[in-house]
Image (tube, rainbow, N blue to C red; front, top):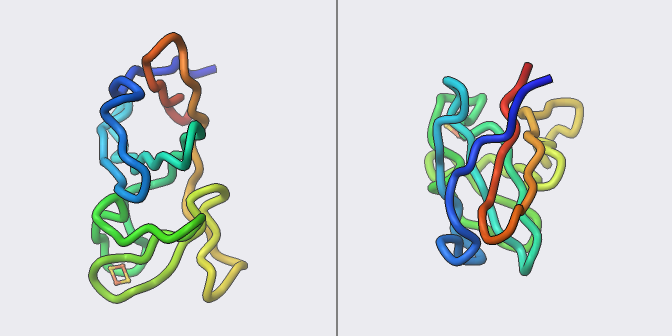
Length: 103
Ligand code: FES
């Protein structure tokens, strides 16, 4: 099982704005909603834009390039729910936000 990696402190994250981090060689987009954190693959499956740069509205991030929309909780492409991007486990330990790498 993969380890968790610290990507920042809770106070580093602002609701409504994603941030991208390298976690064990993968770029991961991390989002804050209230006191909850979510992490999905940062790479848009369409043409590779950074989803962390997208506009966030409730549980949806909209890709900054061509507006494909993804659920930040489960990675579903909202226009075609049969397609998903990877979701990463996130936890908060003390004031650190940690993401678990994929095996
Ligand atoms: S690169 Fe994301 S929608 Fe085109």
